[in-house]
Amino acid sequence: MGNIIKIQKGCKDILPENVTTWQFIEEKARETFSKAGFKEIRTPIFEATELFQRGVGDTTDIVNKEMYTFEKSERSITLRPENTAGVVRAYIENGMHKLPTPVKLYYMGPMFRYERPQAGRQRQFSQVGVEMFGIETPVADAEIIALAVDYLKSVGLNDLDVEINSIGCPKCRDEYKNKIKEVLKDELPNLCEDCQVRYYKNPLRLLDCKVDSCKKIFEKPEIQKVIQSDYICDECSKHFEELKLYLEKLNIKYKINKLLVRGLDYYNRTVFEIKSNNLGTQNAVCGGGRYDTLVSNLSGQPTPAIGFAMGMERLISLIPQIENPKLDVFVVSDNMANALYCTQKIREMGFSAEFDLNNRKFSKQLEKASKVANFAVFYCENEVQKNVVNIKNLSLSTQKEVSFEELGSILHNER
Ligand code: HAM
Image (cartoon, rainbow, N blue to C red; front, side):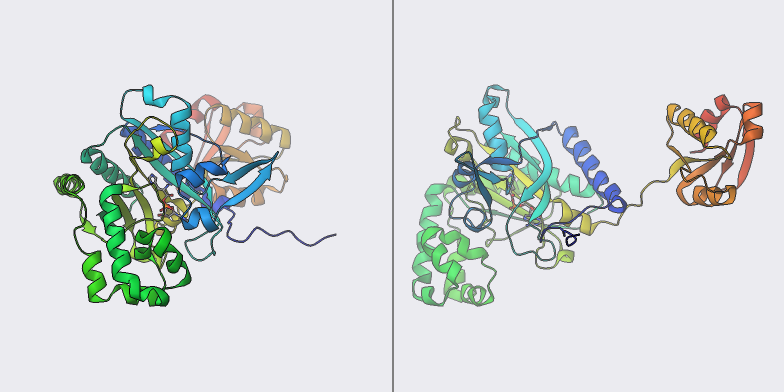
């Protein structure tokens, strides 16, 4: 016999005792998003590597360091590290630009990033997310942020921090990038290795470096002055101001975080994150933003778009675990065939039911019933003869003899 084969690093089994909480957040997502007119989309878990290189951007950590990429029949394939690029591909390929706008889609499922595993960070993790296509005005940004807040409320999370920023359009951002480069020129040798590369490839990303020595440098007053400056152009600024007004109208409290630039290249204008203090360093539950050039960058018709995704494991860690529901009925009998028959009849009536496949003695069966079910239904020889059952409400300890016809309505009323 070989060794026991273990789960891969950075992955987790979701065991039956935890699955009810997962089903709860999945149901709430379906409910909340469909109430807002979003339709579910399911795209493949692997895509052409080029989709992420062109979509997410080849200066990002995700594309440079974190993708699970492999060759198959001389094609380069990648397990999706996120799903915005995949949804945009599907939007273009299925001609969804011909649909009336906005096109509103949501999804949930596994994503894969080869990162250093730690609390709140896995290599296989799940996201639930939404994408909305076709609307450029900031009312769409406000609706998307409100939807994220609604969803979090629906799973019981009311007190999270909403952080927003505008990273402008390619034009005003280029000027800002140059200013950042200029003010950091002399500090370049003191920045971490990654930041030295970012300085040339994508200076905006310098701002969300997590290395302490870099963070200290960015705190210097002359550098802060550039970071905190209002660099975005008039149009981008107007867009952002309107978004703030809408959020205020909706009573959604937000903080402006000028360091919020997000780790994916496709964003412009609004970016946002929703954070919790109870999550440690990986404190973002939700990340999103506007990506008005992604559809055209992936060779579709120019289409403004905005969306977000939430880490489902992080969400789960913030809400109390939900106990698995008890069975409606556990059938107790002195005969396996009768137990099976009675159980089947109860299931046909639409209730959940089990019986003792181990055929243990009566007292053991009853013990099991009180652990796993709300009702015990006795179907032993004397009940079989009379064509009745005895039903015991296990929390009230009341018991009565009833026909199969009556059983259904009792279960229905007392459940
Ligand atoms: P993201 O910020 O990379 O954005 O991921 C969104 C959320 O997924 C994060 O806030 C976090 O909760 C969760 N997450 C990310 N990486 C991990 C990990 N390694 N382990 C556990 N949870 C993780 C996106 O993916 C964009 N596609 C969001 C978006 C949609 N933007 C526009 N539309």
